[in-house]
Image (tube, rainbow, N blue to C red; front, side):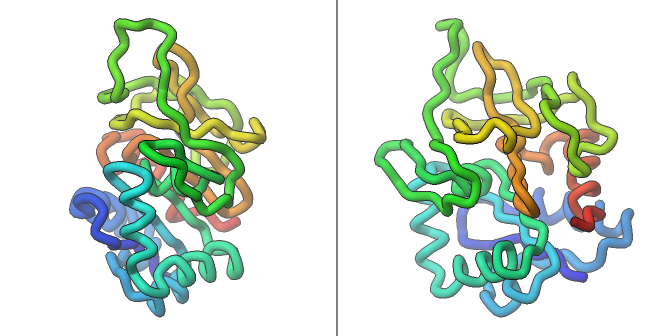
Length: 212
């Protein structure tokens, strides 16, 4: 089995690669490969799409790699392989993003990515640092993870879902902030599991062992 982490030159993949390789070794989940090769992606058993920065820039960078999105879609949609989007990789699952300009997303999980507006004006945006997760729905991705467990966030925008059934977990930051989304074999985390210590490593292991 091979898990691919998509390299489309959007952020530092080193910490994600090391965290996934560590948990793959511990769980016997097979190889973890960082790649931009569409043929490797299309054949993958699992796909991880990270993303750092702004929604429009990440989307342009991804689609600038010829054939890469088509390969991701082949694996995740046509073949139903488990997919995990991280940070902007999660946001791009939405119908559209509103950061700087209206930008189409994949429309795999219906919703709009909008700026966080905390009810408390003393709370700064970006939402940066550790925050508690609030579990909204059980899912194999969350086995062993409970409400109150910490995750590491760095973002100014979050996904407002069209269907609340797709919300697996949120955080509170002057109001609910979407933290984990899921539909069918498609999952996304707004926080960085590779930087979220025990909670993040458990989530990564759960993803690698998930057999939907």
